[in-house]
Length: 396
Image (tube, rainbow, N blue to C red; front, side, top):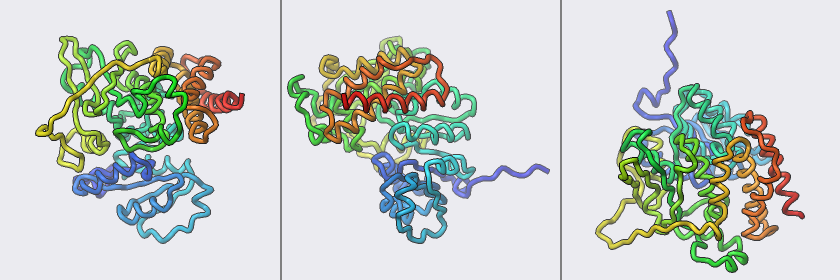
């Protein structure tokens, strides 16, 4: 007689078991806020963190997950771990695979910033999990491989980025074949009204001061350069199976409309909400259901205006670079992503200027040996190469 398939206790109780990768970052903290408000629907089964181990312990004591992973071995081995009854501690980045493939885990929130989150996301997809994807770099670097793996393993990818989650919601209004174009909105960041001369003098402190969103350092800098839109263009190209010519960016300073989808008949569907990451996170965690949650609500009793304008490519060349890479595909996405990560780190360390970030990406991208259909090993090797080349560019 065949044995029954193991079923999580939380599933029996009607709750989804959720593993949060990068639980101490901005997306991770917001995810746990949603989980805190939806205890009847969500049980946190796993957490991971890199360096902020004090917060990881605090989160563990509150949510009592089955597993926690401290991915930075050096930090983890020096840390004085308290007793955490009922929770198994794993040390090392490779241990993420055990967390995401565990039979108890139903949903994996992939919120580790950068290509550091690529392998764990692939492992979750290989295991057929539902992946709430906040790590845009996964699709930027390896979009075709990721989407093919998801299709073959019957895994589900639900976007957590506010723009892509908005596109996902808007697309429910028609058939995929009826989509004419997608417009990703951009706040424009803190320098949307700066001249080119002013942008040459931008400091790290200014770039981190986003006018609308509260985000981590790397994402805040990407918003300031609008490299986040470049990466989102590439991500949208693979996530929604779009031609690059179907993707546009529009500056919307109020950050109320998160994306728009135009259908072939001319109808435009927009997703609107206050700028609060808890809403797209909750949508991904509870989909296909909609439930009351902690996100802020629109106040239509208050007067407001919504502004839209095309981006200035001359001041924000990252957008054109994103479209170029989306058209080129292959290893171009991995190189752009890695070069940007290295350049942003150098800017935060005061080694290069603000406008040098995109210049470094352009130059490294032009130098790379393009491979149209790379394997995951080639992608990771190109990632390593691009970081090294960006380092040389910075020292030149």
